[in-house]
Image (cartoon, rainbow, N blue to C red; front, side, top):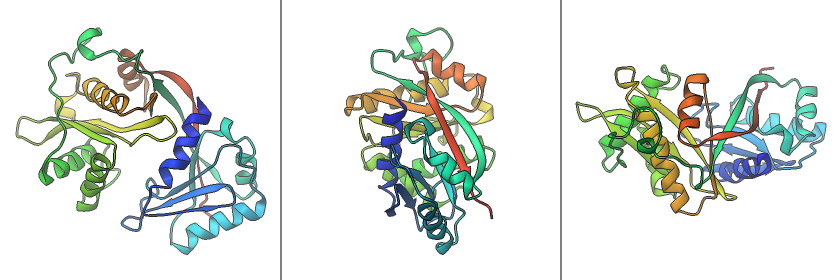
Length: 255
């Protein structure tokens, strides 16, 4: 499974507005933002980069005024991590990812716990996209600022073969939501699952996760995968059918 996920990561980054290949790496850049969580690189499966390849990778980021950063499944390219370490890359994070198949997916109403009556919607208006962007920013503790560019990226996801789903708040805004990429290499990444603090504990995360997985399975994905942030969120995803798939490594170069 790690090879599928890594193949997806490379194909997905090639969708960035300013994507390129260099020395066994795919570099995905978006000129609309300097966020390191949008602008990063990943190796192609089986890559064995030389020290020169890594130096070229660093130079490509520096030329754009960006911090060199990578996300990848190390088991899919064992030669990559040692080359990056030699160049001074350090660990930002190590995340386990979970995978779901159509056969394993369990709608909230069929599983123990809350969520059976949660109504999940697809965004339609510009305000819907802006509300989702604002809510996810708040749910993730302000890791990024809500912006027209953020709302536009959500719309591109929805209109480009992926999906965005949310649950309305009582004021008509967004109580919680998430997004899922368009499929590539038979799989799709579900990300950004967030719920405003006032609405937590109502089954929103599970309901949105299931809705997105169902949508991508209907579009031909054989699997959907995601990363989780703690034991509580892992239990939410396991309850609806996600299971351990492997590990992803996040490295950055701050020299």
